[in-house]
Amino acid sequence: MFSIRTIAFSLVLAGLSPLVLAQAPLAPSADLEPPEVVASMLSALKKNSDEGIAELYSFSSPENRERTGPLASFEQLIRQGFPDLLGHRDARMAPPLMDQGRAMVPVQVQTRTGEISEYIFLLSQQSIPECDGCWMADAVFSPEALQGPSPGLESSPEQPGENPA
Image 1: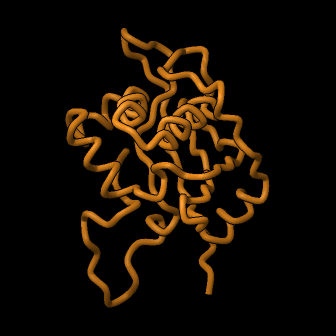
Image 2: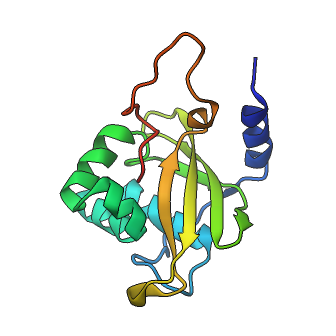
């Protein structure tokens, strides 16, 4: 049985469009809109390299960096919590849902092994001196994280796909 959230996410993904990652910017800019930021993040993840993870980290909001720690901790979090995003074959993005300086961008990726994974990228528009007006990532998680634990099961604080990134 599907939950309303799962059905809603599926309907949003029906409007997915393929991403063109070849020209994705490597760093945040006030000129980038949420879809461009997520495309840049996906391009960095597709590289599956230390350089790509450093590029991804540059798109993390200050609040996200407070939770994830320095780049070395962030890299470990990405490699352990989001292995299916690293080196993915393809990605598709639904139009962002935006409200008052926040954006939610549903994404579907085809992993290196050909499986399909879904994620939600949460962004917020920053008012920080080094990048005023930039959209940056507060978190990335799987849609299942919205459903919470199943009755009778204890939740684990560090389940893959539920970590800030």
